[in-house]
Image (cartoon, rainbow, N blue to C red):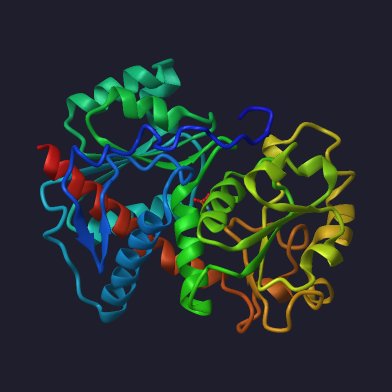
Length: 343
Ligand code: CP
C-alpha cells in the first residue's frame, strides 16, 4: 500500500492459487500440495503445508548445488525473463543462476536500455513479452501490485521479485529456509525485525510467512518507521530496542530505505544508528546464541555495524544469499510443473 499501512486480506484463497479441484494433488518431498500456484505474487494467503513444501523442495536444491550436480533438463526449452524496473544485485543474479542451473534460456531485460525509456507502458511491455512466448517472468517494480497486474495480462507464470512496499516473497522463503536449517523449525522462535519496517516489503513477506509458521514476530523501530495497525498481522510492536531484542532467537536488521522515505522520518543516520543500529552491545540484549540476518543491501554503520554483519558465528547474511539460489530454483521448478499441467 502506498502509505505503508498493512491490512491482511480477508479472502481465504488469493487469486494466484488455482482451486484444488482444477489440479490433482502432487507430492513435493513427503508433503502433498493440493494447490500448486500458477504465479508467486505474495506470501500472504499461503498455508503452512504449502510453505513447508516449498522449503522442502528448496532444501533438496541446496544439497544438489553443494554436490556440484545439475538438473539442466528440468527447464530445458523454457524461457525465463528477468524484468527489473528497480536495481537489484542478489535477486536478479540468483534468479539468473537458478534458471540456468535448471536449463532455462534466461534473458535479463535492462529497463534502463529498453523501450520503457521511450514511454512504453507496463502493459505494452507485457504484451510484447507475451508475443515472445516467455514461460517465466520475474518482475521487480517500484509500484505495489505491478506484478499482479502483469499476471493478469501475460500467459507466463509471474514471480514477484519485490513490488514497492508490498511483498518480496522469495526473500521471505530464503530467510525461512536459512532459519530452519540453523534452528530446525520456525515454530516457537522469537524473531525481532528491526528498523525501517514501514517501507519494507521484506518485512511484510517475512511477517506473513513467520506468523503463519508459528514464530512469534516482533517489529522494533521508531514510531515513524512502524506501519500503522501492524499489530493486526499478529506481531508485537516495540519502540525500545532493548525491550524488543530481549529473548530474541533471530534479529533481522532492515535497510533504511531513504529512497522511499518522506523527509523527517529519522533525524539523521547517526541518530538512527545510536538508537536502532545493530551493534554488539545491542545484540547482547538478545539470547546469547541469537543469530543475525539482513536481506541486503546493507548500510553499514546505519542499521548494522560491520563487526556484527561480518561475525562468522552469529551472522547468517552470506548463508541467506546461498539459500536465495536454492529457493529460486524451487520456485521456478514448482511454477514450471504447474505450467506443464496447463500446456
Ligand atoms: N534482498 C534483495 O532483494 O536484494 P537485491 O535488491 O540486491 O535484489
